[in-house]
Image 1 (cartoon, rainbow over the protein chains, first blue to last red):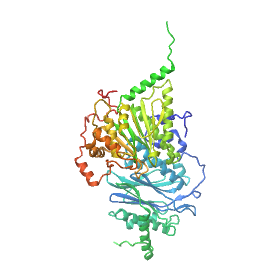
Image 2 (image 1 turned 180 degrees about the vertical axis):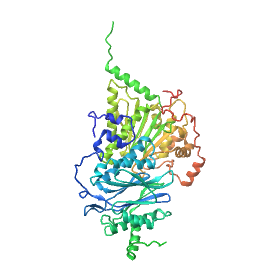
Image 3 (image 1 turned 90 degrees about the horizontal axis):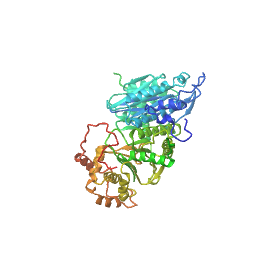
Length: 279
Length: 299
């Protein structure tokens, strides 16, 4: 970041141009952008914390996104109360799996990118526009992804046009894929998706949808050592974000606690979770 | 026979200042007013798209009068500066003081450099704190001079006349509805005859510290504005106005006869139904210049 010695706003600030904060940084302060740093050729994947499982599911009028609270570093639990689900702006949520350091940086940059556009243009981006900006952001991280520092986000939001929630998944190269009904990413995602398949229905309420998310995270933690289940001793529970026409809302701690407690109680009877019907 | 061409520095600066001042006085006024829960901005602006008031950051807003292209450029620079500081430090480290300083240096440098035309703008940088005492309003003029304002500030058009009207009726701790009524009345008292401004001629926004979101800036829509103004209309004559504005005593921050925007739900819907949502006047100029070149406006 450079500032004019006189204190005057640098020329770059006064040049009329695009509304993208990322593009502005690329021109004026490229060192602030992730993905512009050279790392040599080592593989860092076991030396830095990694975030694990994220799930998202839509319900009529919105979408729920939930993430477990564990970050791992190889076989070590790096953090047991990390947060991986964030509001991207008022009507969307973003979460990440993969390298935690870059993931958090990416989320921060993405949040500023959306807010910056909104302030400069006086209007918000369409949900697809937001999803595409996230794509561009991940693509900039490609070199690091190849060295084991991939960030794989999950993006979901309320779409004003269809009056409902939508989910977008990404790969490490920035490919963007729209998912229908539900999706999961991260190390425990396969197990979580199995649970989602069996439990998800299209007519769930927001709370029921959050319950399905909690069930699937518990199933992921059951079979994936890198995914953290609800920590009943410390009362550390998944972060659950709900996006509806009213905007992003993080489900209050006590509501999450009551969902987890009821699921946990039921699992004392049947540790594998609720059985779905055979036909 | 050529006489050496000499202009004294005093004369040069005076000419440049006159030039800028004339440009600014051509437009309509904009007002920033501290009320109990934040800062209210009211500008006379017929364009719904070209704003004179805008959000900069969580607790900061920008208001300007003068040449649109010039202040729009300053606004964008301000948003870039704020977002970049917030991204590289923390959201709490973005301050109005830093931004006002950067603007002052920029305006000052342009004003005193021979090569550039002085900017014909006057701007406000406002930042809300946790209470009225911590609010900051910086007023910056075309030459880069900066003033720390308390209570209210008026720029552009016949600013002094409008400011005088507010000065007569303003009381600290005024409610939002009261502040809005006062500002709209003041904008109408900018000439020899009193004008009644309609909601579609106004651009209104607030920095509201009671807002639960991190970003405290909010535009007030034409419908909401019409409702608030129609509720306070019966008392809009200057004499009764004066009575109600001065009435709220210092101890009641929300007091006064004016209810703030959140009146009882049923009464508000009633009011919204029969509220005279002002008919769009002369909508054939969709992108009207914010500085209305209305020749009837006394400079």
